[in-house]
Amino acid sequence: MKLRSLAGALAATVALPFGAANATDLEVTHWWTSGGEAAAVAELAKAFDATGNKWVDGAIAGSGGTARPIMISRITGGDPMGATQFNHGRQAEELVEAGLMRDLTDVAEREHWRDIVKPSSLLDSCTIEGKIYCAPVNIHSWQWLWLSNAAFEQAGVAVPKNWDEFVAAAPALEKAGIIPLALGGQPWQAAGAFDVLMVAIAGKDVFEQVFAKKDEDVAAGPEIAKVFKAADDARRMSKGSNVQDWNQATNLVITGKAGGQIMGDWAQGEFQVAGKKAGVDYTCLPGLGVNEVISTGGDAFYFPLLDDEEKSKAQEVLASTLLKPETQVAFNLKKGSLPVRGDVDLAAANDCMRKGLDILAKGNVIQGTDQLLSPDSQKQKEDLFSEFFANPSMTPEDAQKRFAQIIADAD
Image 1 (tube, rainbow, N blue to C red):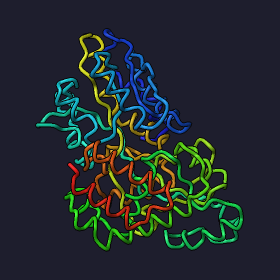
Image 2 (image 1 turned 90 degrees about the vertical axis):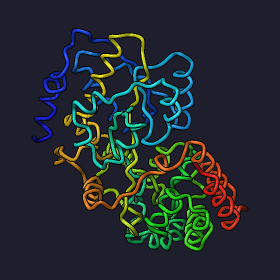
Image 3 (image 1 turned 180 degrees about the vertical axis):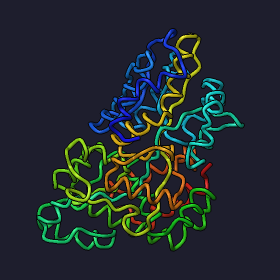
Image 4 (image 1 turned 90 degrees about the horizontal axis):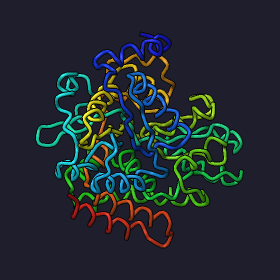
């Protein structure tokens, strides 16, 4: 089915499994507030509204680090929303263990989520003691370097094909008054950039030894020392970014004020809203052009337990709607992410999304650190790299020692 006909079939197909007799409003909280994100979440709202229910948008400005404590506080404080976004992984683990989140196993089994959600690790991240507690909606990969073609043209150098060429081009960019690397001030951006550098430079096996197996010796060893050297280069190149939010950093690339940005594929949504075309106005390098591996983290929706019977039924409708093929196509084309279903038509995918789909098809994937580390260990890692990128006096050697200790203590 082509994309044009998908839109026309949406209302009819989404509403089929459930009647609208018990239609109701359902508040959905999330942190998707940038231009590209807002366009994407509007597709989810449209699909849910087509069932006869109403999506009540509960967007919380800021990153997940800002939004999650608010979401958790509401749930534990007795004021739950109808559904809430979290990243794939362990962010809702304690809420599930406390008995505050709805079991979606019946919906998942009825609609064969185990058969359609790929890779299986996404649904595994939703599963605790054999029960499924979330509906995955996308695959978001961190492993991308986004480049402004105009910036490199202005600097008189070729658009880089890999990280080493990007580092080598930095002096020419600086001479032209262009920031080589855009990096926002939120801690998760610095930590994410380091994780991307690790996969590209040290490789998939080292990444998994450090984050999956929690191997302190590897974290303290020579392969990770090379990654910290690259992070030191990134720190030097990002001096002068002077922005906070990730989408502000992306805008520096979109406007040619910065040469590139290490950021997840959600950056595509911002390029799309700005009217930029992949392969023409900007270039994307998966795995920094060095090691084409992508992480299969992303976003999922959890559903707090509610006393209201009608809203509980609407939760079930929303969970089902999120996994419908039509919803998956419409949402992910706007979001820049990959669908969690492998059986949908993405004929309209752009150049960068096709690269991601090819890598996914080859199985060159890793789990995201949200899936491998507890929220506490993630926070420690973010604090370290936030300080490292902000403080030039912290040496790579000192930072690596602290990193190795975080891994040694990780759960």
